[in-house]
Length: 137
Image: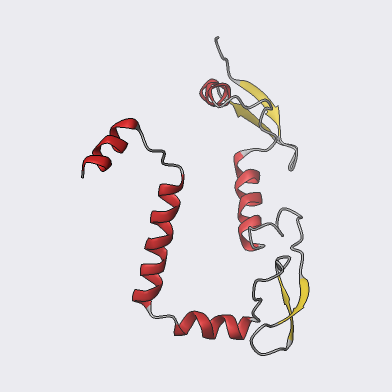
């Protein structure tokens, strides 16, 4: 497929910009369905505004749901950015910080390593070779 430079109109400033053959090839390779809507200056201005606005879900117009609950340690009412699961403790910000600061680094590292080992072994199935090797040992 052969691409030629095309002249497009920016949706923000109304100015014209060139959609080069190289850019079109890139869009084709990435299987993008739509042509660009904005010129490079407007695109970078828009990207900079998203970073200044937080850049997270709120910048995309998605609001974070806050759930009111009671802290399992100190008993004060607090809000958390998730829906608490029954049977699991929920901590306010202060208790969470205190608990996180009191866990020794070595202990936290050992727990993380143990969790990674368990997780990595969950999908492992024993092959006949492995069974034969362990039965002779």
